[in-house]
Length: 163
Image 1 (tube, rainbow, N blue to C red):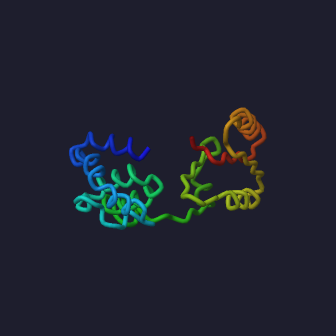
Image 2 (spheres, one colour):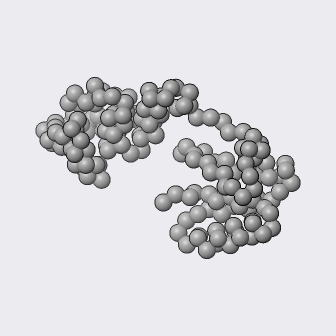
Image 3 (spheres, one colour):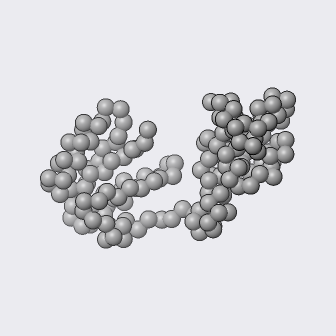
């Protein structure tokens, strides 16, 4: 996968020689790749001088698991540091600003789970909350849960809605 990502990068002017450079200097690139936080280390073959967006492309191609970290750096450089800081959601405020027929969508960081907070808020406002973890074969169950939630007025919590 990484190699295919690098091949795609060669289509961009700043990376047109990346495949040849990696091939010619594979040990140095492997050392960089094997670091705990390659996005913090100096990138081989002069790529350390890339701007934050192009560095994000490089990190995404090499280390998809480090993309979020580099994305935050890009957002901070582009929009300001406050936009890159994770916020602690106030679920009561979210609820007060929402409408019953509009879904609330949370994009989560790895390892975060708002389920206990949402369930706690449901109890506080005297409502029920029923959750379903999405996965292969869960679409029919999810549709039934949503239909029941709309008919009976409880909250349907759809978890893990990703591909």
